[in-house]
Amino acid sequence: MSKIQNVRGTYDLYGIAKRKAKKVIELASKTVENYGFEEIETPIFEFTEVFARNLGDTSDIVTKEMYTFADRGGESLTLRPEGTAGVVRAFISQGMKQNLPVKLYYNGPMFRYERPQKGRQRQFTQFGVEMLGVESPQADVEVISMAYLFLQKLGLEDSVTVEINSLGDKESRDAYREKLVTYLNEHINELSIESKERLNKNPLRILDSKEECDKIVVENAPLYSESLNDTSKAFFEAVLKGLDTLKIPYRVNDRLVRGLDYYAHTVFELTTDKLGAQGTVLAGGRYDGLVAEMGGGDVPGIGWACGVERLSMLLEDDVALKRPVAVIELGSDTHDAALKVAYDLRQSGLRVEHAYSGNIKKRMEKAGKANAYAAVILGSDELEKGVATIKNLDTGTQKEVPLSQIKEEL
Ligand code: ATP
Ligand code: MG
Image (cartoon, rainbow, N blue to C red; front, side):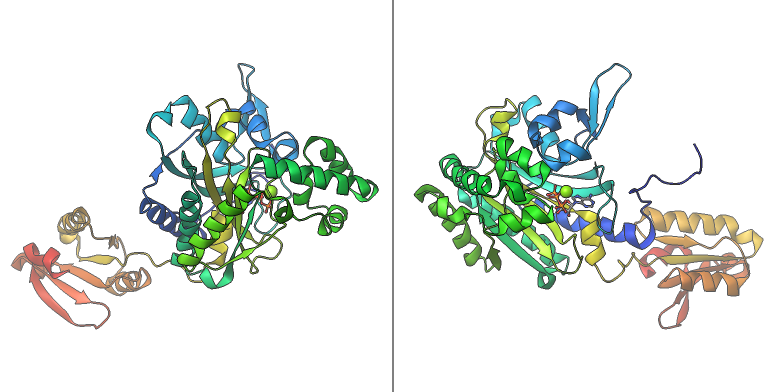
């Protein structure tokens, strides 16, 4: 090892950034709990196969972003690059199918070997939800409304757009794929090497490509909406109608796709123009074929995930901590009493800063720095009388209070 420093693309999260990230997760958790979602924590690594099969062998994640290693027993393991695969794996291996619908949320670190830049890290945090077992478009409306409500609570609704599209059912997707392949074959020489390969394996993936040359070809590709059959159209209309009812603003984006076979019907993204190229803060969709693909039977699913760091960057204000009370002792014989007062106040749920050293002026300065709203001052004379002085640090007024009354007074 050369220098002691963090690995490229990883960050130490502390101070303001950590407070913001925590707020994002807290607000998200509260919002989805109000929809009846329960938290799940799955392992940070899984058998490589869980992701390789789940995410498709032509996806960016599987082809070039996974942290895969052999453990000492020779098993191929992968640090999770996203949350859905692990949750669906848990759903199957824990037999959760007995009690549908299953509504789960998670948050935690994800790992992708990407080129680090603003909003793109190698270890980052996602918060996500998965709803398993509901076939009706009502689930789509609920899950999208939940995402919107969460961003609204974060104060971001003005800078965020809901983009939505439908991939339709299998019949529609097959019809579309055929049209698309015909079109792409006419432009095969203009495609990137990767996309030429995808053309046989997973042509829908090309619509998602970040290569400039692919983007140009894709611009004139056939539109998904033209291939939707009546069932799929009705499904999509029901989703949009639900969003209208809830007055959730959205934009139908015919170019929005998820290029994997088991995605169906609704796909959506919440994007912002405030983060440059990394504008997608939350993305999701319906994955009706995934549980079956992983061997868990025919259970429909829908979910989303958001990037906690990208959302944190959009929060302008620092997150205020609960204001403390400062306990200030004056004189060596007051130490035990101060220790006890601080402990009692903490026990009753207050945040307490106990200033340990310095003269009264120094200690009062510390209290101010900590943004304390009150100081409990314990001097030798007062202690003899069984009282303390409580000073309101906002108004400057102070009064003597019996030791037994401190809690009530604060
Ligand atoms: P992108 O197109 O930006 O690469 P993605 O399609 O790979 O995104 P998803 O897999 O849908 O992203 O992940 C959902 C969310 O997680 C993204 O919208 C983003 O907010 C966040 N995210 C994804 N990759 C990273 C990363 N490397 N660093 C930070 N946040 C990320
Ligand atoms: Mg990516």
